Length: 303
Image 1 (cartoon, rainbow, N blue to C red):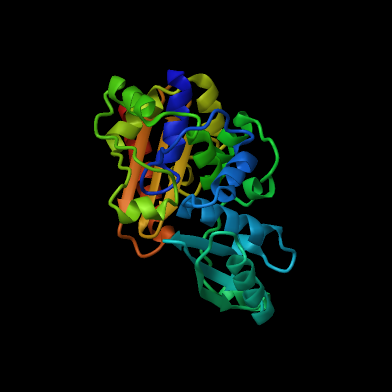
Image 2 (cartoon, rainbow, N blue to C red; image 1 turned 60 degrees about the horizontal axis):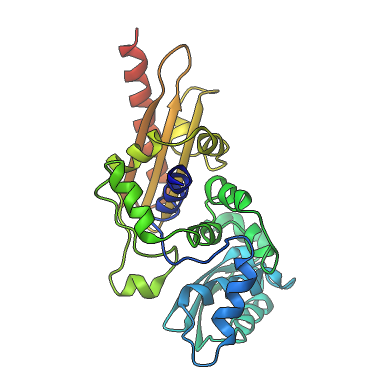
């Protein structure tokens, strides 16, 4: 159980600048469908903003007239905010209409920009969430698949569903047992209502390194398949094996890695957490430079 918790914690902590752990259901795999019915089917039950966000995204992804992966969705007090770029006024209107029809949504604020595809390359596009889990809503998905998506594609939905199999006190207990005493895990990813109440999860580079070094081999294998490699791996010699997890949100970019330098040298952990860079690209370049410097120091010291 402890080793399963380790893998989930690391993914949750780096899916955003803050960590994520929230409630618990009996099974993560059918929860995509079951949780939707529980959240919307009971009269008088308050619908969590995070679930309204999930449902709205799912509706956008399902509509053939709207490229849902190019639209970000936030919800606060039942008001859905749409951001991103769409290719036509018709697509903009369709997205707004879809959001308004989601059960439980009290209102829609649209900040969508109309940018034709031929002009898209001249616009700074916001990174999209992993679209695949939203195409699986209503289906059973194995937990191992959710674990894979939350690591290799940084899926917030997969992270939240996986975290629902754990109790917060179990997560905190594992952190404390490993010496990660500065971890604070209070909520799930994209839970803006909890954020508004000051309920934010926190982590430190030191504690993330402790978790990395305690990872079981199966978790390391998943981390080695990470597809978002613009940070620590990009600062290393080609072919260097890196088991890592990235995370980013506005003005924050993190990367936590186990680096296997090869040549008989021992692996080492490297965690870089940044804040305040104007762009993700600038932050990633800073992380790459640190990665290059640390690797050179490790290699030189081993000679």
